[in-house]
Image 1 (tube, rainbow, N blue to C red):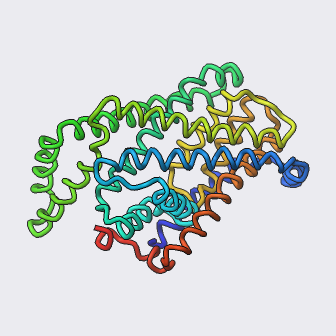
Image 2: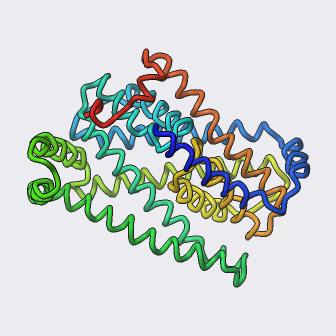
Image 3: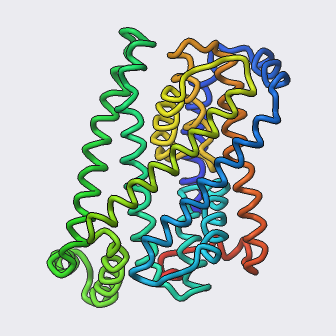
Length: 336
């Protein structure tokens, strides 16, 4: 990755960490962490891994119109992709998933990336649903705090953005030929002639990757699967909460899950440092959890979300005979 992208992410993460930890005594946070009942991490990790398997099933469903690939083949690719997102900036794990699937199964990278984009749009819709559904509880907990108003404004604008993206993809899937003609006309205006034919082929394959959205039944199935994925991840939040001496409702944790995952779309250092932690701590404090306790829980939860899938992804990465140099050198020209 270009160094400026990495350092920009580090700077943003540093700012979010400062916001997350200001006014807290680090010694108190560490003391709370030292008393955590770590056995509760085990069912939390199990819930997350089940969610990872459901993610893989959803991805297979989205890929099926392009090529039917078994879940057993896709699961290691998904784990490697999440590992890549956790240790490299700019979500390079998504490109890594497409690159490995092309190597293993010959699936066109542009079609794979279409399914990944669809995944992210549905994830965003569910996350915003979590936020909107639980905003009244946050308002009751935080009173007239400007924090509630800020979250509500972000959620409304985010709902418009993700809703528009979903509608656009569904329309492109249902009417692929008009969509292709429209994009081709745009490419004729924007690209030099020598690139137009190649770009047109990429567009056709990308639109092919949206084919799973042509049926309302199939789109509903993807939405319900996405809901199950994020409820399982919220289950991990709930299990990890039991490692500490506080209690909030499952709905409050749904809200926290929605807010922190929307925040991690902001560019940051690898592993979403800061962009995960600051909003997570803020939500818990709004529900009356003491600052040091909220910080200890959020930091442990972040580690428990990051470490298992990263280790699993590294294991599968080693089995793929890939080198780190190949990952660092991933470029659009190589992939496409």
